[in-house]
Image (cartoon, rainbow, N blue to C red):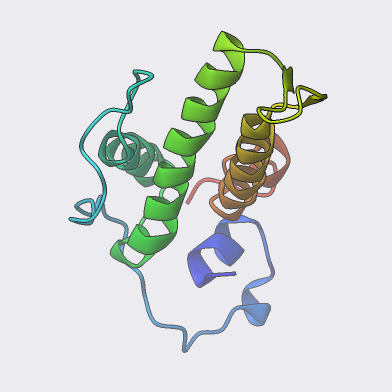
Amino acid sequence: MPKNMRLVTGMRKDRVNKEEPDAPISVPDPPDYLSQDSPETGGRSAFDWFVHLSAKLARMRVMSEFDVEALSKMAEDEVIYRHAMAIIQQTDLIVQAPKTGVAMQNPWLSVKNKAQERLMKGYAEFGMTPSSRTRVNRI
């Protein structure tokens, strides 16, 4: 856990690594590789999610330029999650297999669940869930 997070979570100061490099609070630019196109299901692009989430994290005082890669993965997962949800809502949770016609779980449900799992881990890492936020104090 980074020094800033350890301090704001209330960890004893004598247990904080004083030699850890500083990561100044900032709102970094999104990486060039993030898509700026909204998915065909509508909604925000990965670029838009990055901007949205980085602003929130900066207000929480936990965003720095070193977090760009982790946050860009979260932004991509937001798009995947919402895209999968839109397709599931247009179809059903149970669909027919294309070749056999047998009832099966909608394959997009697995896509949604995996993206949701990665998002929840990312949210916890950045202190964006209720339980992880209870360990964060203002600086």
